[in-house]
Length: 388
Image (cartoon, rainbow, N blue to C red; front, side, top):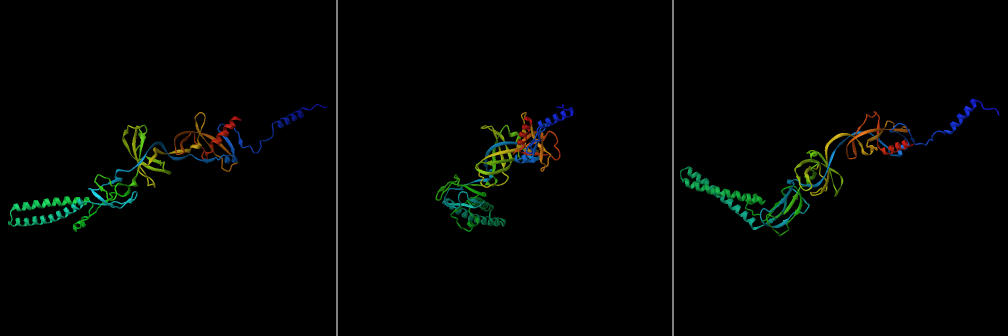
């Protein structure tokens, strides 16, 4: 056999090497590895299956949060105790527990001989005042004409002033009893005295019953106005420097499921409670909510130092083994067959409501979009590529 020429031998070696290297990568390969650190290439199908969603760094209202617990309370002017002005027997009760009442509405009525006696004394005092007034005017006229002695005028004047004082005293007592003075001036004795509500609100307690003799010391009714409920919470002394009036507060009530309620800090206490080393903070509630009642336990968050900051959802941020926070961005279009993701390092700050304040280590391209969901899948592919 004739020996192969050098050209033929070289051609055979080239063919053998080409065949040993294998054919092209299969069409269904999903991840294309790249030597660039932090760079991951995914197919559109892979990104869809991984649930990757794209967004951007945007401004969000964030703050340093102070957590505290407490209860719902009423302002001092929104609760009232109703007492009888003097001892009496309960004749009628016109309201029920939980019923809404208005200022001046009759809650109950009572009677007693002493109440009737005051009305009788008032009418007598009114008659005596009328008589002494006429006598005093008559003596003034006589003294002016030098018909009567000055001594008679002094006596008439003293009687009139005494009658006037007695009349005003009894008139005040009658009004205090809630008696209609116009009816009484028509000589109509009123046998039953009304107990009226001093505020608009709801009947919280009824502590009397029909036929009971009740003294002025007994609280007959408790009326509360829950339209201005407040949250009284207790903040640890180490956190109180961050709390100030006007700050936003959100709170939840365990017994009432539903969205968070909002309010604002009104006042902070001026002393530390020895038990628990806490300070009392009072906050308003922005709007009325059905079902809120005094005494309910609240779990609250005071949003201190609140400001608009650039932020990302927490699930978009990854922390590597060295503690460096980062995210992935892409400049690929949504209809591209492949999506190229690049790592961007971040400096993080406040973390609130699922958002984290972030500052990118370098400016992002103008058309860059951040992976706000599925970023951990991208990270896993990067680690896989690094291990290949």
